[in-house]
Image 1: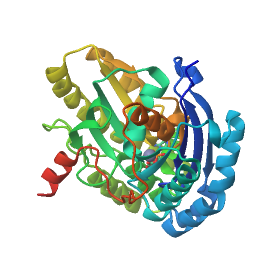
Image 2: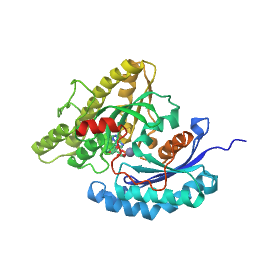
Image 3: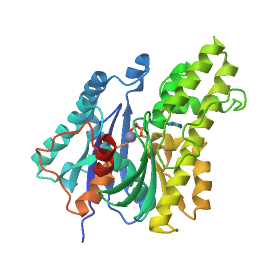
Image 4: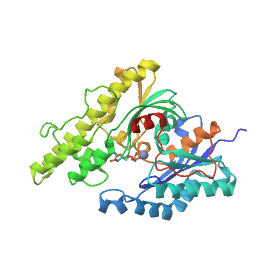
Amino acid sequence: MVRAMLVLGIETSCDETAAAVVEDAPAADKRIRSTLVLSQLAEHRPYGGVVPEIAARAHLEHLDSLIARALDAAGVSLGDLAGVAATGGPGLIGGVMVGVMEAKAIAYARGLPFVAVNHLEGHALSARLTDDVAFPYLLLLVSGGHCQLLAVEGVGTYRRLGTTIDDAAGECFDKGAKLLGLGYPGGPAIEQAARSGHVARFPLPRPLLGRPGCDFSFSGLKTALAETVRRQGSLDDRARADLAASLQAAIVDCLLDRTAHAAAAFTARHGRGHALVAAGGVAANAMLRPRLSKLASDWNLRFVVPPPALCTDNAAMIAWAGVERLKLGLTDTLDFAPRPRWPLDPAAASARSR
Ligand code: KG4
Ligand code: ZN
């Protein structure tokens, strides 16, 4: 009998400590054997954002027991694993080091292969874990730290079509929520407040809308919101809801416009009939999903977005990227050094910095 490939995944690059066991099973709904996420929200909330030092300490404190619980929930022991995968970057370096050291220690002690996973690749491949999406596909990767459009052509082969020239979309949600006194993390708070808000009351700009290319910009939107808040003086709940609705609508309009440009570029090169995938925390947004779905059908692309819990940071996506890499023999040595920066498309990243 062929043994199932079971991989332990570890995610510690930001403010979630996560561990998961994923299996290379033929049916997508059987792949995740366990997935646990320990959020550090309570620790960071008083500061209105993630404090790297607090995050690293919390990962260190909880990771051992979380891994034990993930193995237990999956009904497996370390001896059953085919490999250990951990986020190797990009992210807050203290946290990444905690996860990488733990994975290396397990791999060394058990004689298992170790895979250092690019966190962004984890997000990028998550749709293959849930929906068996074939390469190539167009990816909108929208999280707290990243906002990119990529052609995903294979494991490790990413062509960046566009990126943000300033803030990420999630960052805009988070900073906007802070300005409105809606707390952290901003995305879910803005989405909630926007439900009872009216978009027409406070018009906000849509940076780069209609301009050529696939790059994003959100800092002008954030500044416009700050200015509107300042002019209002104090905010009541009505104004808060209306501003949240305006901000969400503006961010979603920008994301849609740039994704439409990317869909044109992608289909010109690869033809129609592929998939448009959304990933990253902002892809959990309930207003964004139906709009992207409509855009995809306009371009004859299949729209795939993982369930919200697999859009925000989790370890199942890291374990799955580990599965994909292990199957291709792409393992890392134990002298892998955690990478605070790690672009998916190094050529595009260095072209921009020149
Ligand atoms: O992927 P993720 O969990 O962490 C990063 O790698 O950054 O994304 C977190 C980001 C935060 O900025 C958060 O505000 C945003 O995703 N987010 C949302 C929603 N849920 C999370 N943004 C908009 N709507 C949501 N429902
Ligand atoms: Zn992420």
